Amino acid sequence: MNFWMLFLGVFAVSAVTSQSLMDLCIILLSLGWLIDGIKKKSFRWPIQFKWIGIEWAFGAYLLAICLGYAVNASSDAPWLQGLGKFTWIIHLYIFIFAFQKVEIRAIPVLHYFSAAFLFPSLYALAAHINGYDPITDRPAARVLGFVNSATYHAHGNAVVFVFFSAMLLYSWHQLSRKWRSIASFALAVLGLSILFTFTRGIWLSILISGILMLFLYNLKIAIRFLVCAIFVITCSYLMWPRFSERVDLLFSKNGGDVARASLFKVNVQIWKEYPLLGIGYGENMRRNREYWDRPEWNMPKDFLTSHAHNQILNVMATTGILGLIPFLFFTGFFMVKNWKMLRLVVRNRKPFLFSVLFACLWVQIEFFLACLTDVGFEY
Image (cartoon, rainbow, N blue to C red):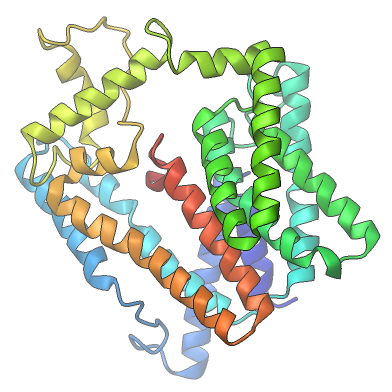
């Protein structure tokens, strides 16, 4: 195992367990990129970085954010902290470079996923069954995981779950009986840890993306999955009170979703007041209370202040139409690119590449659907 494979692997599991470990991995990968460039005496743009083709949208999005801070944000807006989040653009190129240094094969990937994500999932479930988290002593009525948040655990691990599922689906016949059992057990435990976060948006994103991708994969399997899903959901609703409570909350006028509905409406109002550049990146959360204090809202002092719980609306409210356009372009770019590559490898009959691209497309669809109920992209 080389340097790049080691830290890409550690990064993958740290993304759903430890922010500090994730930061360490990206620092080490960045240092590896610098050292590699110095050794080859080729440390010049774009020799080390390959152009993707959507850089203009990254630049336009950042420009819209900067203009939003300058024109509409309050004078004490933490603009430097906001712009600091966009180191993900640099990280993206670091990852492209790092993945060129490794050879990915299906069976080792499944072995890794089976081992690496099993313990965090078991820990999360055990803490939930116990009723509190042993590390933080926080109540664990919902699965919290190492990230100490039901929402973060659900969103992060959903990406892992669908990628793992797709790779297992395509490599099932290549695995030994022992590893089929291990991989199936690890995937089931991971899935249960997501289920018991009681995060409805993730339940739906996994279900809908799964149905869509299985129809693309095999019609008969998709129909069977759909029938089983309807049966399981119906039984769960009728026989599992906690499940039915979470579903009923969606339609309750007096439930906790009143807060989310209000946040959605107030972000629509923010966008209407700042249609071109938005209120400022992150300012919709920071200045939420200003709106609650207005006569038309008149919310209690302890009423929830948060984001829009919808990625597209959140982008509109914080960066306006001028930010939304490039955001949609680079989000759509990767999905379209993925689809085109998928069709290309079908024609060239490259089954392993097809399995990886199929898994990546599933991840992107699931993530996009998940972002309709939260702002996963921001994290």
